[in-house]
Amino acid sequence: MIKSMHMLFILLSVSSFIIRIMLAEFKPALLQVKIAKIAPHVIDTILLLSGIALVFQGNWLAGEYGWIVTKFIMLLVYVGFGVMAMRNAGIRRWGAFALALACFGYILSVAITKNGFI
Image 1: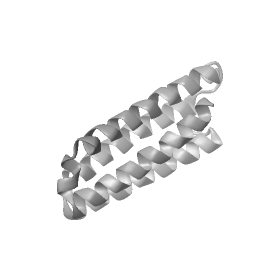
Image 2: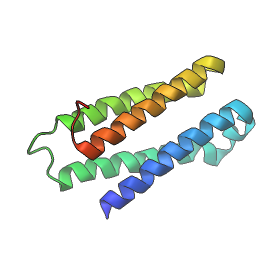
Image 3: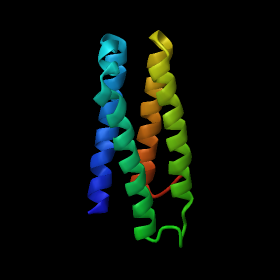
Image 4: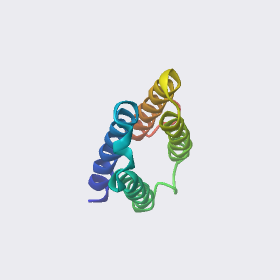
């Protein structure tokens, strides 16, 4: 149940990030709507809490957990590039956006393989 919820919120989080970047580029006024400001934080909070619950439910800290540390570090990098993408414009926005999506892809591959050194 928690894993399904976590995967759903992964999709919601990445989708909302892509939508917010498109809005920032083409319709920035829509980002001022209250739901557009609040929803990403709610989605990402639930995503993070479900991830933490999965770590403890799966007892993953008892064994090899380097992949979890890798995911967490890359999550911070992903957030950093996401913030850069939202705050910048032009080529800097799109570069940070591409790097954020690359981080997401790496996080996804680490989650699937449980190997932080892909």
